[in-house]
Length: 141
Image (cartoon, rainbow, N blue to C red):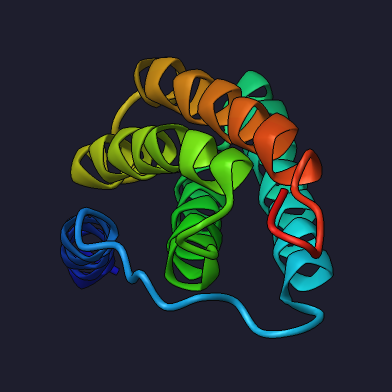
C-alpha cells in the first residue's frame, strides 16, 4: 500500500505536464456532445470527491481527484481549437488538473481536511469549465 501514493503522485504530475501541452486538432463531427458528456462525468467525480472529503475519506478524495484530472486531460485533447467557449474552458481545466496534482502529492495518508481545500478548488474549476463546455455548439460558435 505504501507504493500507491507514489504511483498516484507520478500520475498526477504526469497529467499536469500533459495538460499544459494542449492538442490543437479540431474536433470531429459529434465531438462536442462527447466533450460535454466527459465534462458532466468530470463534475460528477468532483462532487463525489468533495462529498467523500466531508466524510473524511482521504483515499476516495485521491481516487476521484485522479479521475477529475484524467477527464480534464481527455477534454483538453479533444477541444476544437477554433471554438471560443472551448478556449475559455482551457484555463479552468488546467486549474482542476493542477489542484488535483496537489491532492496527489499529499497522498491519502494526510488528514482529509488538508486535501479537501485543493479538492474544493478543483471542483470549482471543473464546474466553471463545464459552464464553457456547455456553451459550445457543433458549429464551433
